[in-house]
Length: 271
Image (cartoon, rainbow, N blue to C red; front, side):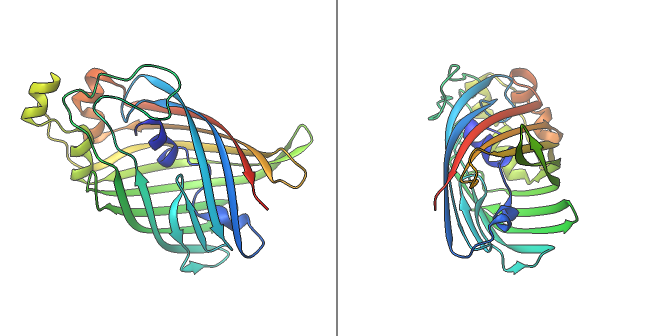
């Protein structure tokens, strides 16, 4: 994935579209937070950077949600077992100079020199979730209307539960995931045309779509106060790039198809 902010969006989001189901009260709720994420500097890189990232989440009842991590969505179908509706997500730009606004460690990468920038992408689509006891199956399909201009499809299964650590109740989730992308997506991030080859030193490469990555993600949320308004959130993820993304000379010559990330965040739910 990505600049560090983008890893946080897609690979290790703290919660998915179903997160607002935990809110039992009607009305608006705002959660503010921040923390650190250790992740590859761009999709397919073998160098990692630590970034400090903000988090703002707004929900209304259990039907509307909006955050940088989870996108903006609305549950048109909202039953105890089935949820579905429209969703929009933002994928931040990838700059060929390697600059990252939130990075606090490491140097700007030179791997992308000559490949050009990929502008910020607005992706619009739909999601569906189905609960089978403690397991939630989910799927999303989105089309970018800017930036990479390709389509993205995500499939995931999440096993969730609650436990106790040091006398405090914690909630956790873990499960596999896979991503499929269209030709335009892979060409934007992993293709190399003749002009880019001359400028970057990489060979010409035509990237097609298909299975993009597979892996797993996990999160643990531990309340820090008795009213659960303060919480500590740990996230971790691993994905392996495959298909034309994994075979790209950008990944094979300058990066790695194994992508991991670790994050620790503190969040405060406002009254």
